[in-house]
Image 1 (cartoon, protein in one colour):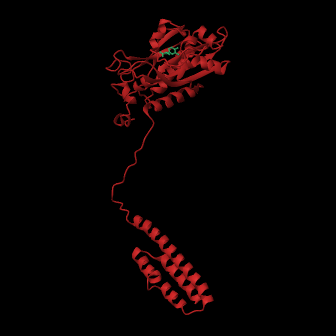
Image 2 (spheres, protein in one colour):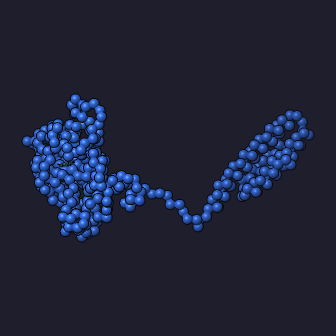
Image 3 (cartoon, helix red, strand yellow):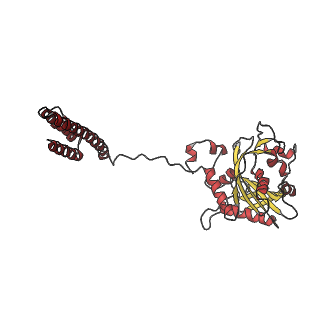
Length: 348
Ligand code: DAH
């Protein structure tokens, strides 16, 4: 009888494992575990055997029952999954997962960093919550100097540092200049600092939070031709249409005044829409993009660098502004970039 039970168990397990439908499984459950099923028949017969044998066989019957119940459950789950697969209808239109991409400004930042890294600049980042010293004073803008007004600064309500003065949200990436001099200590320095900046301004060409990139080169014998060459290189690379003879931008520098550079310039790029002829975007054929100049000796001194031995140039522009001058990006309101309006952002 023991052997019979073993055979019954093996046979039942084999059949359950091969069952190909839920109905078949249900029939097997009835055949083996049902009220009049095989297992119960065996149990009936246990009444006629001796007590000792009944004990052993009883346990065997229980084990068999448990094994069959387990097998039935497992096979049922398997069939459930299979049937799901079998129900797959390839004619039903698929559901396209939402595919995201980098924000237009992040794309611009990556591209700008790449262009400067190619000619040996090192990308750095400095604090957005900054001390007055790095944002102004070390840049040759003494306390209460009217030149500071241009930066429309947000002040942080925190106790001032005895050494560095008030806490501010950095209004420009020039705050990275003296920090970089302190980091590198001995030139050469080739820095590209790309960061968020903040100013109290909001209209269709300004957002209170925006991005700038700041270049700083310091070494022996650096002069304006290096500055002009670098700016021209950037203009060509950034506005390269990718076509052999497509339009690209050239740069020009105009005399200007900044406290932290001497001489100082404003930088213009020729318009890529009209190749400098003048159109509805640029009017004059040029777009003003930012400032530049030769680093003021006082700034070098603030950074612990000897102005008699070293000279340098710096430039700083808005990332958004530079990017929006590219062909194909027309924007009535710059703040749209930060509006999270997917209808706009998806286009890029
Ligand atoms: N930091 C200036 C601004 O935000 C731009 C600038 C002008 C940066 C002259 C420079 C520079 O490095 O040399 O308007």
